[in-house]
Length: 135
Image (cartoon, rainbow, N blue to C red; front, side, top):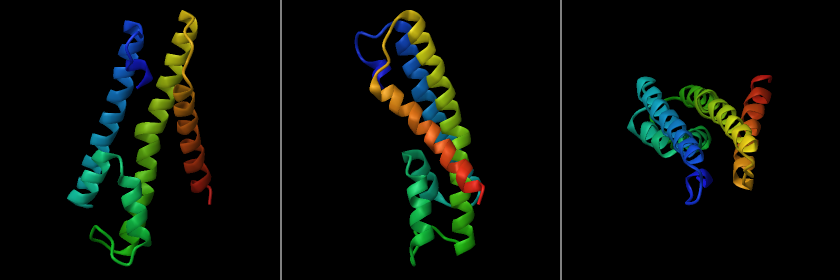
């Protein structure tokens, strides 16, 4: 979002739109995958809002889950969501944002702390999923 602020160069604004497009694309694909997996409309809507991981954790821990299915179904949905988050959001966002930072450096522009925090979040998300799959 910092790339979309007034006063940014046209290239940086385009990079901001690309970053937002990557996010929207990932959430729409995740919603479609949730629907295709039979998780229902609630799960698809949660994916569109970016709340699918929260829904999956709630369904796993709750005695009365918000979506239908057995404990194993909710566990599988949770695992699938984590991998989708990494494959559709963290990896593409991390790579693209690093590319943008390199372009900004070449142009002599200074990256904002929000951009650095976003890259750190993507790296931490990837590291967390890799550590969890090692168990």
